Structures are given as C-alpha cells and as structure tokens.
Length: 416
Image (cartoon, rainbow, N blue to C red; front, side):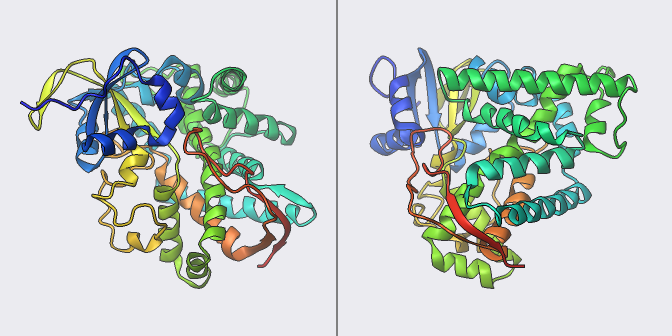
C-alpha cells in the first residue's frame, strides 16, 4: 500500500486563504504528487488535481455531496436542499429538472435574448461617458436570465435583483459584511420567488405555460408531490445566479482581447469555431471556481491508496485546467489548443467534470458557453470602445477573481 503524501503542520486553513487558487497546485508541485493530505478547518482533507483525480472524484459510488458544503456556502452560493447537496436518485431526479432547460430550442431562445439585450445595452452606452463593464454586464446577464426563465420583473426591480444575485457568488468565500450581504441577498430573492410560485399555483398569477419557470413550478419529486415553493425558488436561483456570474468571464474576455491582440484578430476575421475556441480558452486560462467539494462515501482503495469514509476532499478545478500533463504550455493563452481537444469530461473542468445528468457537472455549462460567445462577438466585432489607463491585474487569492478595475471602458460605439 502507498501512503498519500501528507502536508506537515496542524492546520493549513490560513495558507488556503493566503494562497487562494494556487494553494493546491503549490503543494502538488512541492510534494511531486497529484494528491496529498492536509488539515483544513480542523478536519483531515484530501486535495487532488489532474485528469485521473477528476475521474475518481466524480465516481458517485465513492464520493458524496450531501452534508459536505460549509454552511456559509449553502447560505450564499447553493441554497438549502439544492441539487448540489443531493446524491443518488434524488440528485438525478432534480438534475433532470435543470437539464430540461438545456434543450436545443431553449438554448436558441437564450442566444436570441442575449443578442437583444446586448444590442440594447450598447445603444445605451453610446450616450454614457464611462462604463464599468463588470457591473454593466451583471445587469445584462440578469435581464437575459429573467427573460429566458420566464420571470416577469418590473423595471425598477432589476438593479436590486442584479445586486442580490451577484452578492451570492461574490460572498461565497467572503467573511464579515460582504458575507452577510450575500445571505441577505439570497433571503430576499428566495422570499420574492417563493411568493411568485405560491401565486402561480393558486392561479393568482399567469405565466407562459411553455416557460422554464412553469416547468419548475409544477415539478414533482420522486414521491409524486410538488416541490416545496422554497425549494423551487432555490432551483430557479440555480439558473439565475450562474448566468449573472458569467459577468466575471465577460471581464476576462475583454481583458484577453486587450492582452492578446493576435488572438483578437483571429476572432474578428475568423469563423464561429474561432470564437468558440477563444471562449473555451478564457474558461481554461483565467480563474473562476477554485475547487469542488465532496466526502468519501465509504472506505475504499484506489491505486494502492486508502480513502477513509467521511474524509473531506477537494478537487482542484483551476489546477487541473493548468496541469502540464494535460495541457502543453498551460500558462500561455492559446485558443488553438481547442481545435483538436477530444472533449474529455475530466481534463477540462472549469465548471466541474463528469456526466451532466448522472454526475455533479454544472447543468448550465452550455448556457455559459453560448452567452459568452454572444458577449465575445459584441466586444470584439460589434462595438468599438477605448480602454483608459487602469489596473488590469487580477488576484490569484481573492475568490472570485477579476481585474481590479472591473474593466472600465469609454467612448462606446456600435459597429453593426
């Protein structure tokens, strides 16, 4: 039997906070391994990265998610009793609901809505002197999400909803006032949606019977009962919040277009495949989700290493996307690498890995890619703007990370 390398020391929670996205890659490099043991928040933890580790981590017979996420993440990012906290048949049944929104027709509708909302936004920006792209993109994403899901919302409520949804993912790793803002934001949105759901079921409010919201409102659990309105609200947020979080990627799209002009030229003069590869490289190259969490479901042996039941486990998403055993020159921005990528579900995992339906890979990954492609088309080809002097650096410690200036643009003009 082989021992999993052990990081020395009593507890390394502070090191994780100090090193952020690089905590696991740094240890894997220094210990010459893809897997090591440590202690985080007082508990024994296995940290791992790489393709083989991802294949292991997404084996539902070996790892579970129920009861794994820290309460602060549940209270801000995931929500109580959400699909991310379920296992086995309950998870599969709930995941089917989310995947029902990912049909070809619904994704085509999403693209059309995104095109419309971006066009309206750029028209408005032409009359404004300065745009903070991160904040402006959040509102565009919120409008896209609500229209796509079929949630009627008053114009004067859009900014508040945008801030609340953004606070949920901005506060996931935060402490203090920012964390409490995330909790308040989630509570406010859940309460609002819950009331909408109750009114729809009581026929006090009419919605499109072909909408995604309608499917969620009338979804039944495995016992044939309608889901509790609060749980429906949580799962609706699981569509809205990730779409608003695409604003982080949009910032990195703008940064990449500025930092890599040759790649921008390829996008401007290229085909749809070039835009797709550019988007994929943005998702691989820049930091987004740092890691995924699980616990060992029952004790087992893998590659002559023992995994004990109940051990907390982290899979490094960023590190796997920068693993030199998978990616040639991983720290260089090269969209062309996706020209011959084999679409392996375990070596490119910015939003998780494995199977969409049976596993815990993000159901909204297709949504992310399609909205990013529309956003790239506007930022690279369908609008002109200036990028004044600003701090374009981004932290590898703060989670989520983004350019410090949040990408300030000026003199916006539509080009087509």
